[in-house]
Amino acid sequence: MMGRTIFIDPGRCIGCQACVSACRECDSHRGKSMIHLDYTEPGMSVASLPTVCMHCEDPVAPCAEVCPADAILVTADGVVQQADTTRCIGCANCVNACPFGVPKIDLQAKLQMKCNLCYDRTAYGLAPMCATVCPTGALFYGTLEELQAERPGVQVADSFAFGDVMVSTGVAMVVPADKVQWPVPGGLPVVEVNGVDVR
Picture 1 (cartoon, rainbow, N blue to C red):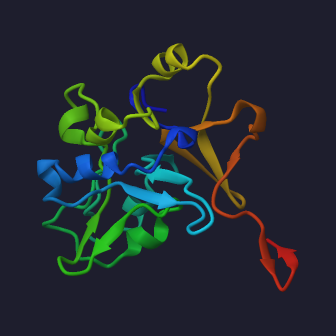
Picture 2: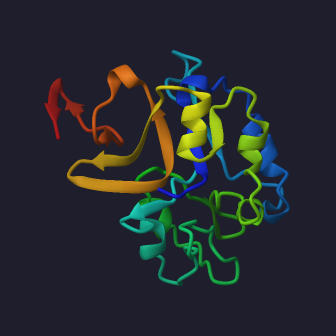
């Protein structure tokens, strides 16, 4: 895991969309938000979850690995950049390869759009815009030690299982201490078809 990174704490998210608005303000994003606020059970619950790029470390950035134009670069410190606008061909391979569903394609511009950890800020020690404005700390930027000092006993996960595939990330997720299971299951590990559980 990177030294300073984003820690996502879903239990603190109130769905205020401050992160979405702040992300839109970044000059490098051209007025578009690179963070997604997902509602886990629309119509049933107000529970929400900010979705940022998890900056996959192992395997290294599946989105970059499948890019036929080499438009997605990974910095030396593990930050997976958004697609280079001069190289991206809008093929959406990255969208299909991402296990977390992060990259989106701007169909008009034919460009991939995704969180790049506000690299123009974090490269200089500043927090990403989303973490700067989050009123509840659902998005925390810092080290694991700083997080644990502020929230004693917190558990975090940076490894997720998608079936038989393990993905280690540079961004971590806060998990409830009483419900920890390692690795944290990603996606939907059990699917029900006609009332029968299948994998």
